[in-house]
Length: 411
Image: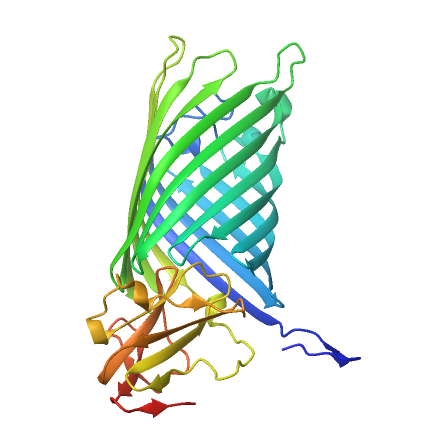
């Protein structure tokens, strides 16, 4: 905690936190290089269909205080193929967030990174850019977000590719409706404009345009399982060609396998249907099986300055006040044994308070001995300040409390 006094002014408390996550995955990709090339016509595209191994560490550090959140993230993606060598992508992201400006939230970020491909050294490039996002919480269950991003890529060997680099601009709109604590429904639209800087001055700079609109659903059938599905459709066109039609989607299931491990299965699909006679159809299918390890406390669970009344539950009759620090969270809910761990009850969703880190809610749980835990953006989180703890059967712990009809419990 940082507290500086003088002339009637005190600096707000500062909460420092950090987290680490590592994903180890294997799978099969029918068109791997589409992740870095806009289409098979791009000069940095290479045909590869086959298995891969992937290691993806992500480190996050954050400072929260005075209604602001500074966050620094570093991620790396090391992919080993069996026929196209090794691909290595790393990037860093520095952001400033103001989570609560009335019903609004604001986030701005700058980022940079580098891509290397072992067998295709000419594809090496540096990237950098900026991003801004405005969120609006219209009601307790409805929120919307508008995002604008601009980025540049600079290729190391422009002569070999005949491409110095490119500039991309992306605009996104999304609306998310959460009719229940366990269900999110979304609508989104995205527009991308990619402008290429060619080496040959006799050639006009190339430009690619893409529009996509999609729907998505995320559902938690139980506290340890998260499922999601999405589908989208759109168009893509380049200068001098007709407009192609594109379709795609994704399915994912995440199962909590321990206190700090998730098992994730993902399937992703992209289909391109060309309308120009000089172009051809193409597709991408990706099937991935991953283990995700959470190697450090998340920002929501790192050490934090004390708050009045703490995070321990407060009982009044059969009603319980639950509190949780979850800086940067979009949704926080509490689930428990009083209704067989149901995750689809809107009344179990906690509300953000004036403190941007703190979420709070009163719930009538009824008399009896109860277990409980929190869900932060769908991820189970161990309660802080519970009267006692019991093993949850997955390597973690549930909070436990006893409620009598006339009980009053405070800490």
